[in-house]
Amino acid sequence: MELTYQTRKGKAYTGNSLDLLDSLEDNSINLVMTSPPFDLLRQKSYGNLNGDAYIEWLTEFAVKVKDKLTEDGSFVLDLGGAYKKGVPVRNIYNFKVMIKFVEELGFFLAEEFFWYNSSKLPSPIEWVNKRKIRAKDSVNTVWWFSKSEFPKADVKKVLVPYSDRMQKLLKDSKKYYDAKERPSGHNISEGFNKDNGGAIPSNLLQIPNSESNSKYLKYCKKTGVKGHPARFPAKLPEFFIKYLTDPDDVVLDIFGGSNTTGETAENLERQWISCDLDREFVAISAFRFAQDEEQAKSLYERIMNGECVDLRENTLV
Image (tube, rainbow, N blue to C red; front, side):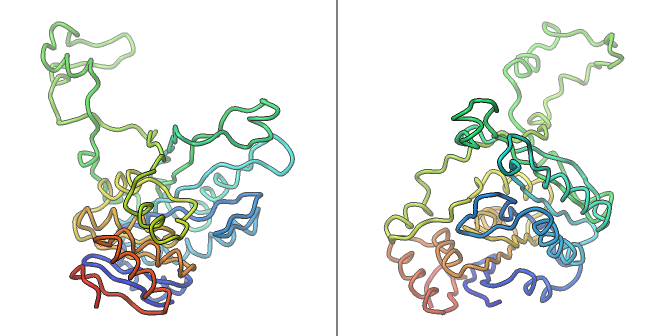
């Protein structure tokens, strides 16, 4: 495990995240936000295991994560769905992971989230496209684990725009509702029409993963390298970083990939740490912090040659 590059707010490492976790102080990380390789039948270029072996592998990391989290810290884990081999029935590994982490490791499930990716291509091909006996799989489970029953969280930081109807209600409440108890038992008071700056979000996060013209991909193309094949959109870590941390808190991604988490944390003035086994993925992730095409190429070449690059002043040294 070695430091590969650092920026004004963060550090990116190449190596095994188990070693990185061992090197960190206990109770020092406010949020672990990550998306590991999923339990998939088809092997991916970035690696993946299957079945019980996958769950045990992921558990090794979770045990160490728990020690490193602050008492009010959180562990947010994005896991995609999968099918069993050869049959149109679901692999429930993601639910097994959740149950194991809670019942055996002592995490609390603060809340379950579901990330709906409207731009996801139809899959699996056999059951959806060919035989047409299953619907498109477009939702990932995102488990929000916490070390204690009351992790740091402030939903006011992630309010969403009001609906058109709510905006009309705020302008003229008497026209749209009467303050009284409803048949359901809910008491709708006069305070219902208070403008709080936005609505409380739901645990269904509707975020398309349709990046096509980002700086990261632009520099990949110009440099002649392939970007990481399993990137999540910046709005996913952005939601949880805003929701669960404060400026200068520490955010860790133990399966860094293209380092979307690190870039997002930097933009939100959080400290960040990222780690990935693949040196080339780490080198390419530095594109997120490059000022131009020439700097991106230089970053890639120097990192692939084994150098540690310092970008704290956004200049190569």
